[in-house]
Length: 283
Image (tube, rainbow, N blue to C red; front, top):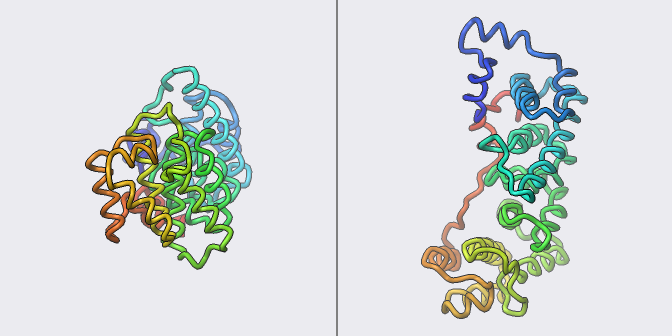
């Protein structure tokens, strides 16, 4: 799993008899849970590794609750650091690794937290795997571009598209389809003012592309007309999105219009969890 080198650094990976002995002497789940509810960043990093060393099917309710508590707390700390212009001490925030634990738990209580963590393909796959119970929260983030983080928005747009592709359009009620169409309109319809003028054109392009991809899987003639107009000229693209049409964005939109693959491709959750080392506990 991704914490392999961190485990080696902390001396808890069983690569030798001595380290195997240390694994057998891990703190109790009660102690790990108490640490996760604390505020010591280094201690929390150790606690995450310790939690990962325990088969997830053996996690106690107290540890599961502490993981969600710590995840919520770390998300808040991440936001405060960003607002203050401070770089947190890790290359990846603890919230990412805590979110991995929350995904393995498959607890619906984690859904409002997972939409806030920048985890890319894993996030989109995990939220889709929750089924209908995740749809309202993902939709809420995607339809509020002025209130959410860029990374949350772009991956929620991808998650919505993945949900439609994996579940089938017939899975959604007429009202839900209308809600999805309204989301697309926020990003690529000339009837709406350009969103987030504080974003770079690259960010605008990416969200517009992902919204357009979502629109195309909805099989709506009006939305298809919007997407076709996006690639007619740079002026049309700028008018409809506030961005600047570049060669890559144009290529991806035309590829989607022609029925080609829509990137990023999101795989089943089991594929990602297997890649992270969760091969025994997660089914």
